[in-house]
Image (cartoon, rainbow, N blue to C red):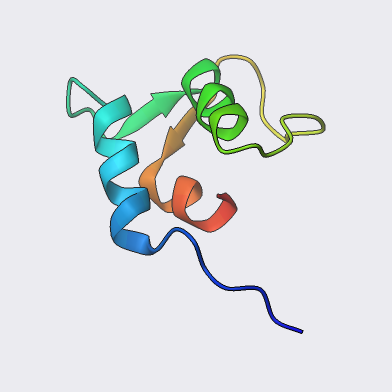
Length: 63
């Protein structure tokens, strides 16, 4: 059985834009982990270093 999509790409874009308040095109790993936790997703075993910048493309793909 396939699960329904509760969040579509436009929702992810809006969420990313709220996190990227300066319009730099990326968010920090801390912001990314916070978004994942807010959505009830795991933050363990992320393949990023502490100083990683998360782009919209990565955000869409992994959330």
